[in-house]
Image 1 (cartoon, rainbow, N blue to C red):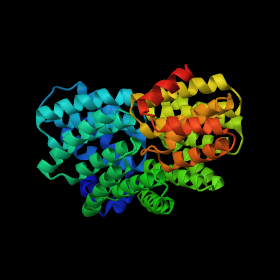
Image 2: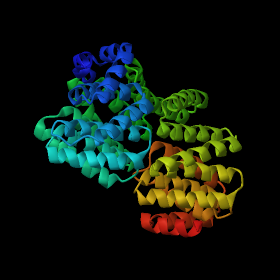
Image 3: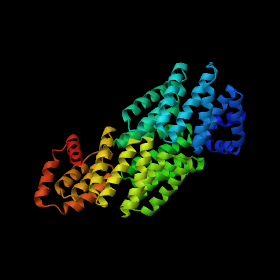
Length: 451
């Protein structure tokens, strides 16, 4: 316990790398000390060991070992009398068990644990633990596409952090708000949240948070087509994640670098990034990363004309997203599957994929995703002979403010191909109709067409 306490504070500051290395060298002794404290019911020792051991498991990506260690601990502590000494330690173990379930994409298991912990720490008046739990519940709400709920959790967290001057907690909440804004197409707001969080992370010297927020800025830059700047952010992020041994973060940076390379036309480099990320995801049990990277590999296979491989990869991706419950991911992989089905001339399958993808994206108000699905539907309309409707959809999408750069690229390629085929009458119809279109009208028409 004394050894871990010595390094505990360093896990959140400039000496983070040294602390991780030191704990890693002594991990067998740390495990033995942890088990001894559980067996002997030494609550004070458990409390001293809990946070640094949790941080080590989390940063190193030992997610399954962390989950099992906390699961055993929580089960044992539940059987003990609820004394004032026990309750804070029990609550911390409960919250961190929920955290590992979240990291592994097991949201249904995570949520009740986190809510139980939140209720307990509100009652005990432990504001830092309340912040941690609000942030975790906010991040899960974001992952599930429940953006308004995520914002409620994060704003409460930020207000509490300001009252108690807890900068580390504020960084996490700002990052989640940035991700929510990006997924909803509000890129300026997203960048503001990420930059604000990055400034605070640099101030306190939290390398992990710095890397994560750099990656968030890179992701937003990619969505805006600012590839050079985005690459710089993500490369710096990847370097830090690798230096501190954060494999979860490494996957996120690799995914973004692959996305940028793919959009710049370097499919082979994209596949290199994706393959490394997929290997790491499977090694640490990171299901979210696995699902995202399978879909991204499927996108490359689609571009390169290997439609059966694309279908196989994206089908696996959808199945994994469904297990996790990540609605944005489900919509995105179904959109890819719809485009694969068009290429295979499986038009009924394409309609079914786009219909479910669109309903899912609408339910979570993911406007950029809705626009991407519209592009796929336009391709389908063109294939089945409805050129006017295809062009009408593309014209609407192309002038929408929430369209990201990837969507613009797809839209312009499809537009140039189809506009060249259109008669003067069709062109006149499209230009006249496009001035009057509203999102709800387009949604209603598209869903009716897909039914």
